[in-house]
Image (cartoon, rainbow, N blue to C red):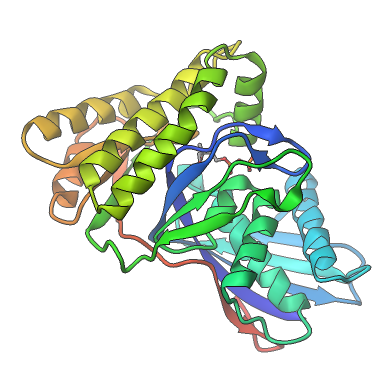
Length: 341
Ligand code: DP6
């Protein structure tokens, strides 16, 4: 009862921010994201009747407390989905191939990989992830972390809004495979983190509870999603970039208006936005986005990615840059006794 799975992280171009059901982790808004090549989590789950407790090793270090409890609850969820009344305790080992200290560690790739590995390990027959399974796995992953629902899919995918009380009301759906728009690039300016961030779960709860700008953000999301989907279908990067930039800035505006304010943006982040706007005046196609951390990110083309990365690298506070292509959806790497991280 052992399996290894991999999942890549994803960056939202239409942002998920806020829940309409905390217990079932259902999003208050629809989102659209790009799964990134090269930034992935690999996770081994090993169920063993001889173990007395679940254990979690993340990047070679033992992890306890709430992160372990969250993993245990997720393993319970997977077992229930497979119709198992109980499950053996598990050893979970997980490794990110991108530096966790840089603050890029993503719950998206983590919960997608955990979901797939745990399902493969507990399944009586080899898990073949067809479309129907991918949907079920996405619903499971979403309950661990909303953005993880999208990492089940490669390329561009959408996560819908949930209906409170209905666990299967929000899942990821594929929009374009990673090979369908090969010209897309996502550039990340890895910025210093002088302070620990508020995690996205707490950040979005606090925003929803206290920000007068949260309701307008939610109200604008469906039309942003429709515009983004139309832009993706037309392979129109300018149109997609414009939606991405305003969706990210509106998400941050709602967080900034929370009481007390949640400020993920740092000097390097804002500078990143200005740099991209300057590059656009010179004919470069690049649009800003940013998540629950300080790193400026840019949606751009293969031809312009190096120029954008160089411009980010020159910003004080940006340590290094990453250029990522569209990447694949979550997958099983190995099952059975031989499966190892
Ligand atoms: C800013 O998926 O981390 O990255 O569901 O509470 O685990 P939970 O939140 P999470 O939130 C992601 C927020 C975001 C935008 C996005 O990925 O859509």
